[in-house]
Every structure is written in structure tokens, then in C-alpha cells.
Length: 75
Image 1 (cartoon, rainbow, N blue to C red):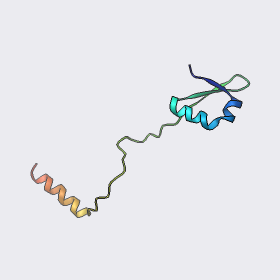
Image 2 (image 1 turned 30 degrees about the vertical axis):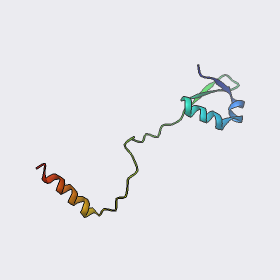
Image 3 (image 1 turned 60 degrees about the horizontal axis):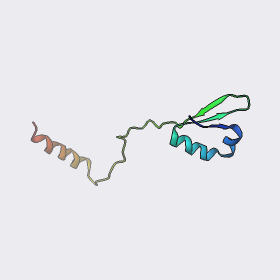
Image 4 (image 1 turned 120 degrees about the vertical axis):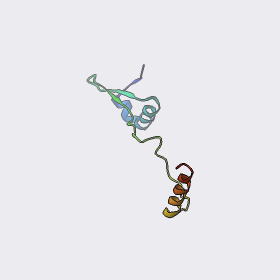
């Protein structure tokens, strides 16, 4: 069961509760009137294949030449 924090506790410890939400997926905060709210981290939606490129110092012409050379043997 997920712990439920009071509004006052959440206000005093917001940074640590946001860290906990990031680790555990969510936290719950209860207001004085009894309403309970769930705080969850937002996923970025980026692809795991979205990686930073590497500068190999090749020109466009050199890259095209390598592609053509590689295709010579498959055509």
C-alpha cells in the first residue's frame, strides 16, 4: 500500500516526496477535506533509440562513397 501524506507534510517535504514518486511511481496527498491526490512522474516519451551522435569527421561525399561501395557487393 502506498503511503498517504497530509498536505502539510507534502509542503514541508516536497523535494523528497517528488524523489520518492520518481522511485516508486507515485505518492498520495490527502487534503483536510479528505480528498486524495496522486502525484506521478511524467514520462518523457523519448525513444531508447534516440542516442547522441558521434562526430567522425566525415564529409557528406565520403559517407555517400561508403554507401555506394557497400552496395557494390549486394547488387
